[in-house]
Length: 393
Ligand code: TGC
Ligand code: FAD
Image 1 (cartoon, rainbow, N blue to C red):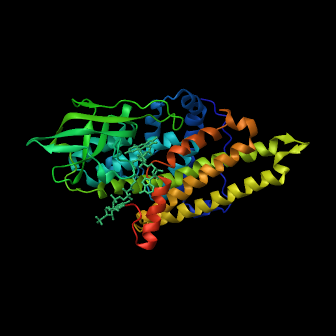
Image 2: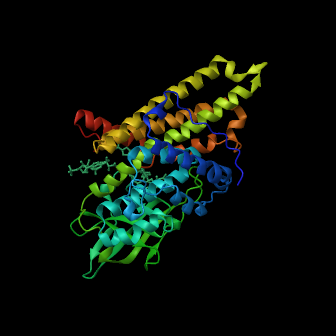
Image 3: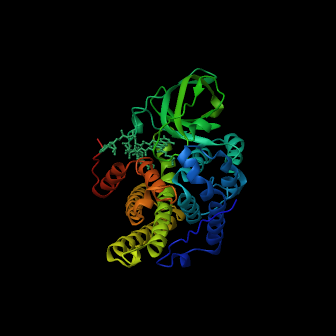
C-alpha cells in the first residue's frame, strides 16, 4: 500500500535522548506500520464506520497487544516506556485503533496474566498476543458507568458451573470479540472476574450504532441470559472492585501516552499547513495569531510528553500510584482535545474535511475524555488524593 503520510513527530525538548536504542527501534517499527497500514485506510473506515479487523494480525506483529506481558505467554516483555511509545504511535494514527490495542492488552491480557490460572494463561494469552483472538472488557452497565461498584450483573453458584445474568454497555470490541473478561457480583456481593467465550448459550453482543466518535472502533453490549460458565473460567483469587480498577490503571496509563500522539499529529498537520497556506500575500504561519496557537500547542504537548515519560519511569519502578495515572490521563486528553480544536481552526474550512486527520482526532477524543474514567472522575481522584476527602459520594 502506498502512503503519502508525511508525519514528523515533534520533539521540542529532545526527549529522544531519554530513550534507549530498544525504545527507538520499537517506536520506528510501529511508526512505519502506522504509515504503511493504518493512515492510508483509516479515514475511509472511520467515514464508513467500519472496524478494520484485518489489522489485528499486524497489530499483534508490532507488539501492540500486551507489550509488557512476558515472552513465555506470547507478549513482548517490554518496559512501560516502550508500551507508552507503542500507544502513542498507534493513536497518532487513530484513537479507535489504539482503543482496540488498549482493551486487548490492558483490559483482557493483563487481568488474565495477573489473576488467571496457569491453564487460562496458556489457553488465551498467546492467541490474544498475536491477534488470533480479539477480547473485550465488560465493566460498565447501562445504569452504572462512573460507579461500577454498584453493578447488578450477577453469578450464581450452581455446583459445577456458574449461572451469569445481566448486561454490560458501551463495550469496545464486543461485537467482534472471541472472549470477554466480565466483572459480576457473586452471592456474597463480591466482584468476581470471569472469561466468557463467544458461542456460550445465552450470550449475545449487539452492536451500538450511530456513533460520531471512534467510528473505526466497534462498540457493543454484552447480554447474559442464563449463561452457564464453567468453573474453570473464573479468576480464583480476586474478589473485589480492585480487580477491574487495577486493569484500568494499565489502560489509563496507555491513554495518557496515546492521546499525546493524537495531539502530535494535529500539531504536525497544522504547522505544515500554516507554512504553506497563503492569505494576504504571505503564509498564515507568519501571522502572530496563528503563531500563538502553534506555540501554545507545542508547549502543552512538550509538558505532557515530560509528564508521561516520568510516569513511565515510576511505573517501571513499580512506584506509579493510581492517582498519578489519573492525573496524566486527564491532562493528556484535555490537552489533546484543545490542540485538536486549535489545529482545526488553523486549517480553516479544510479542517472539517477528511482530507486531514484533525476532525477525526477531535471527535475520537470526545470518547477518550469520557471512557476509562471521565474528566470529572479523574479530577475527583486527584482531589481525594491530595485532601483525603472523598467528594464522589
Ligand atoms: P473506592 O471505595 O474508592 O475504592 C475501593 C477499593 O479499590 C481501591 N482502588 C483502586 N485499586 C487499584 N486501582 C485503582 N485505580 C483504584 N481505585 C480505587 C481503593 O483503594 C479501595 O481499596 P480498599 O483496600 O480500601 O478496599 O471505590 P469506589 O467504588 O468508590 O470507586 C472509586 C472510583 C469512582 C474512583 C472508581 O469507581 C472509578 O474509577 N470509576 C470510573 C469508572 C471507569 O473508569 N470505568 C471504565 C470502564 S472500562 C472503559 O472505559 C474501557 S474504554 C476502552 C477503550 O480504550 O476503548
Ligand atoms: P455517567 O457515569 O452517567 O456520568 C455522566 C456525567 O456525570 C459525567 O460527566 C460524569 O463525569 C458525571 N459524574 C458521574 N459521577 C459523578 C460524581 N460523583 N461527581 C461529579 N460528576 C459525576 N466500558 C467498559 O466497561 N468497557 C469498554 O470497553 C468501554 N468502552 C467504551 C467505548 C466508548 C466509545 C465509550 C463512549 C465508553 C466506553 N465504556 C466502556 C464506558 C465508559 O467507561 C463510561 O462511559 C464511563 O465510565 C462513564 O460512564 P457513563 O457514560 O455511564 O457516565
